[in-house]
Image: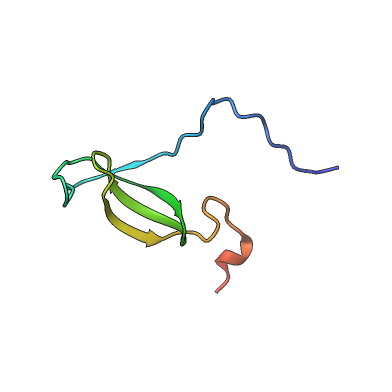
Length: 76
């Protein structure tokens, strides 16, 4: 028997929180930049994307397993 208890989600669809970033898109000029994690072929990245045209303004490697953090990730 498992010691983990995962409650049933109450939302019908998952929602990723996004952080508004000041500035404008280099492609379309819209001032709709937001920062949030994205999973792609290279792993998890923290990106800043234009919400009007989805152009990536920046993309930096994020946590290896995304939202899951392991105790070994904090070892130097």
